[in-house]
Length: 190
Image (cartoon, rainbow, N blue to C red):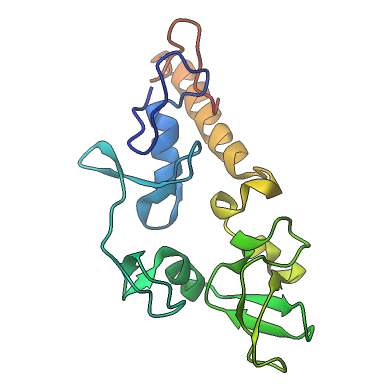
């Protein structure tokens, strides 16, 4: 099983993850940086080791929040993600839409609710308002980054399918799966 660098999971816990499942999460994520399925911290594989991503801190030049981890171009991870694929959101006050270079969906309790956090409305309001991602852009919300309150969706199911296919291929070649159940316990994702 994988030793998670971000959260302490006891050896006796039923929530444990095999190393290959965590590798699949990192391999299928943007820039090789995935999210821990337990605590949602950013993780990656460096020199064959699973590590927590640590970055310099400062004020993000997009959202202007201070003491944020700055990942690239003086942007926090949220603004970097949002600037690479800005989604369209509906303003709760004027009802107009606006592209926002920040993942405001992270602050929505459900896909159809407005965010708890605010962003400047550059349409009619000229003020900080609440937003919700448009239905047409919902498929562009990264599966691994959807709020936990929305449910897991297909993100973990896709990891399970990749791992099951790998296990089936290993059995077919008589090599056996790389990660076997230890003392009757299985990886929580399988």
